[in-house]
Length: 442
Ligand SMILES: [Zn+2]
Image (tube, helix red, strand yellow):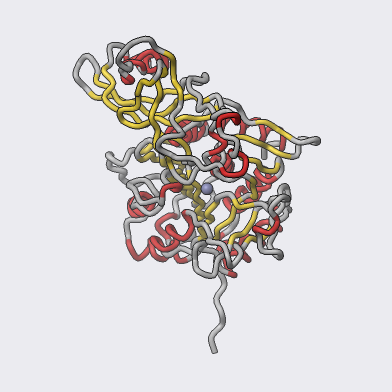
């Protein structure tokens, strides 16, 4: 088991180097490969996977990894956990560049439910996936990451809007266009040509490339930090939900294949999960069908399995205590939070919550409880979608955090470490510890 300080170092490195879901999936894959996991491709035939450890990517941004023993076809429980690789942000438009008053600006779409105000006055960089045509006429794709500030969205000076602190609203189309460069030319530059230098720097095989298209996002260049008088906080972008992805990857790596375990890291959670690689798409189901081809054995397996859906929860904000139910106030550094909702926005029930609490007790970590106020709408996550798709007992949990969906979020330094410990315990658990008990009938 990693030491707590080692954990922070590993977490910071993973998130700082994963500015987009593509990078998160690639870094996850690299970590798995370095630990003996073998890559499988959906386009190949997988005949008789022997016991061992494997992973599969879909659309370069979602990842499923599993560690199997030779008893997979016997209907024994599967330890399953999921998280998401994407975070709300700004995605570059197809024809992004426009020129006004000597300023070249880059049009962006808002991806997911981003808190927009924190995007102003930040040193923004650009990263994502680019596809290009090579000299030989073939299509290639690769990742780029500028890793330096290349854009900024300057605020309007307070002197030009005296009511900004009391009445500010943000127009997504007109107020949020990043400034990329100054230019005396009449026409705006060709964005695809601008990308070439970075593309070749990150993909040496792309020389003489013609960029055809891209999936690029802006991100804040400020790295994660330990903050607070006693370093009790961690702050940074994408804690929701790369902190959970990191914990699941490391917990799976630490599980030997004594038991069958699987993790799924889905893209597109922040935009509703309906996509080829999202949690409401067929990715996990497709992989399970290939791992356990017999539908009866598969059903037997899933009925006895447990799915832990891991996504961050709202810690109580001391300036806004009234936004929480008074009896459910998750605190930073007080452990993972079990999330419940009577209307099934979370898939947790009393039994799956109890199983998770038992695992927390065994891992000797604290555990908290969240339920939304009745007068506020409840969010959701991949848990209910996966539970509904697969019919697998599910619990929704996650570490508490503040400023969810900000460009810089705040969490407790200990909670990710607690999460890693409980997930490691779950992947090491015997079959009996995983199964929901039944109400005895007369
Ligand atoms: Zn999330």
